[in-house]
Image 1 (cartoon, rainbow, N blue to C red):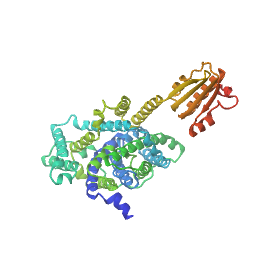
Image 2 (cartoon, one colour):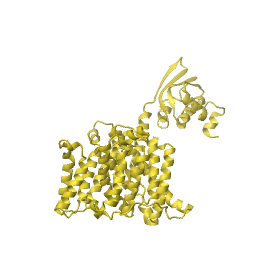
Image 3 (cartoon, rainbow, N blue to C red):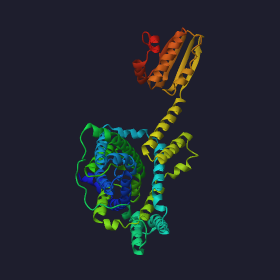
Image 4 (cartoon, rainbow, N blue to C red):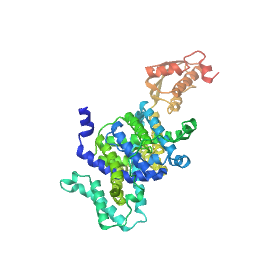
Length: 494
């Protein structure tokens, strides 16, 4: 118990507490903004962020990662709230959690290994662009004071770490928020503040069950939304976990994270909050501010509730320009600048996958569409590349025996090359197909072998197939027809 407490919670006390405070301050305007996107009261997003952050600190599989109400999930709730109201949203949040827990127990989080590095890079770059674009409304049609505060904030963030001794002790984003708030209050600047985003709650969340009929009609209403939110939420969480893994040089349990996200959403729904997931921007802020353990996530959630419920009057005075400066820092730090420099060095297919992922996410504002498009493209490029590693060499012995040596991978994308390598009209009495250095992967490959063997036999040649490895032989024995009675009839479907 003490060993777990020390290794997962208490080994980085100062860094985690300070980072958690920075994240809590940055979460407030985002939670309010995402509530507005979803069409609900600001307190729904704030309660959700508190519940999810605290729960995931204990149940999640990626220490140091921040989860809360997010824009990716809020976008999917708009229609449900508009057509059916808040209570159906709370019910959908509960169902979302159940679906995510089932995904975790089915170990589908392991599917992240099929997401290529180019897709992850595209995802990261797209999110960096979206984070920056989300700040633009705060920088348009405003007075020069806002620009001055934003520039000053960026100056503090990037220069404060160079201050001797304290520069590396106190996170510069926290210093930026505190100094700009004090300056704005002292000078009495007329700038947009957190309080202008919406009314902050003045009470703790309370347990409640959604006031909806428990019948099939309700399930049919919320299921499509819950499924979509669950998929998008897990995609963003898994991608964010991978990024935090890279930033901290540590590993995480993706399946536990799926279950943790599900439990966090259930808690959120029962306490009057909406569904959420991991937040890449806040997670990067946490890591760059020194947060590493589960304590930083817990502190962020607890501080968030304390700030909005008990210190709301002070929090409401924070100028949005200070938080804009922090988020611009996040977008700059999140973007993979190496991906631009490597465009000339990396293969064209890798660059296409990365750029298409960026384009789809940015234009649709839907992370799931971008990631799925990227994974599909990467898979097609991979299949096409592997298909070209198939070689079929042949030699003629004693004028009547043709030996074909097949080397490489035979599957749906390479069967055309496989078929084209055989001279089916050659007048030989014996054909030997040596598959010692080949591997058959699917039914399409087995069908191609059947077709070649049966066409040679139709031309009067005796055909032997040798060298199948155990896995390929199992597939051919189960689905192949060339070595079975009435083979020609089976192949043609008669």
